[in-house]
Length: 146
Image: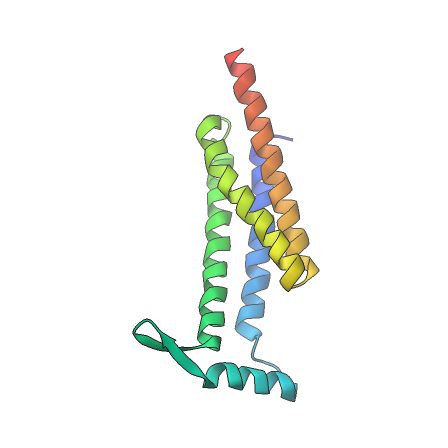
């Protein structure tokens, strides 16, 4: 399989994670369980100083969740862009892909430990695909110089 398609499949896996996380994020408070509602209320109710502002645990959760959505969408776009130029620019593409693969692997680990299996597996798949692309680009680069 060509690097282009490997990176595009990885981009789609990350997009799947972004969409799933977005659905979870925007529906997280649509819960009728009284204990869950009480937790949400407690998270929203208690505010503490962070720098010059007062923030709640719910605001932290909300902000970090939104940050993850933006990050996943940015990775999706980066992987798609790189899929089109990676074979022509293998060295710089590999340099850009390394931090992405490490971040996706870390997302897989934290998803496994703190969340649930679907985002963990999705990130494992995406990180393995990106790693394969990196290795193929390395091989392509060394065969051009030989």
